[in-house]
Length: 273
Image 1 (cartoon, rainbow, N blue to C red):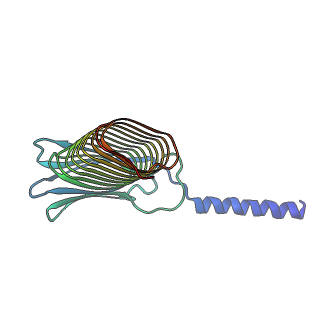
Image 2: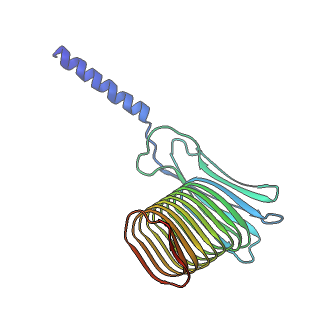
Image 3: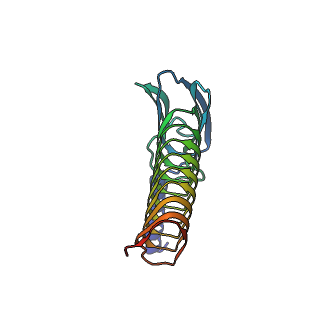
């Protein structure tokens, strides 16, 4: 064989071999189901620290315990490579559900834990989530969410709501309480809200309808549609169209670039930019 070709072939084989060793492909081909409960006695709040996977949280009237159903998807070569626990710490319950650290790349599905959590309706929630969809409904208490990525859907909450979201869509309906949102990117819809709303948004469209309270928006980019707000709407906008249809008052601090459409503002209409 030509020496140059031989050297090239050996080098290629070495590189390919190196890639295989370093890459360490991981496939979530092992499924385990676990269920556990914790009595709500003397517990006022649930703290959730979750990694990758979907998270469904349902509040139920009359429920006297926290119930967790976990579907765990791991690599069959390392099936116990996860942390999953529900413990009482003082007057709070702490749920942890995470994959342990690993190196390499994922082949087909990635390791994750899908959670279904049922709680007493009046239990406060403090949620930290890495990635995956969140579906939360029927809670009568304060809710705090810190989310990395994935859509968030919230329905029927009586209590203040604080959301810090990295990326993904945010869909909120039927909330009685003040809402504060810090959002990186993704579309946002908030409908049928009784309370004040404060939004600090990086990018993505914003749609708000039927808000009984005041609303404040600091927005980087993306179209904004605001319909039927009883209080004063304050907007500081970088770029994107703004459409306000029905408000108790309107104050435009900055409109940036994009069209502006305003109808049926009952109170003062101020433009500072």
